[in-house]
Image (cartoon, rainbow, N blue to C red; front, side):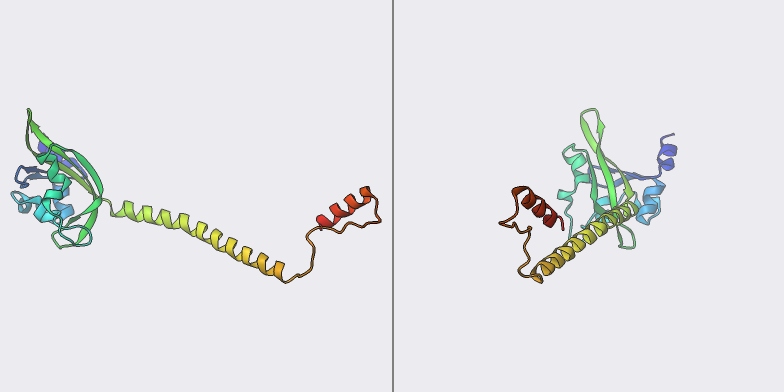
Length: 183
């Protein structure tokens, strides 16, 4: 029954022993990595799929959260790293790693993972769609500010408020000032 459950899962699932060697992997996990299940069993999963960062720089297994699940008993969920396929291409992955416990003793770890390429692409498109209007508004605001400055500097001597006549009555002056102000 356990085998049927593993094979029915749509995400990749594999287990590793305390040396980091694969003790089981489901069909979806092997396919995501570009292998057949039998080719992965017994192999060190860090060396096989998690050996390098996205930029290609080495990723020591001492820094690997997957291995820390069984070394330190620390479960994790990560979505900022990559796994490497058989063809040496990388794909962004979300994975979780939890220790396999037998009583109080850690025996290994179980890892579930999914390819998040499409999710990252959609998030990037959403950020771009949000940034485009904001950028256009900022550009248009800058253009309008420059046009206002240019317009103001091309009209020398124009007063901002209406003139107040010395001969006019205070009521008339206020009315004149208001009328000029609204022009």
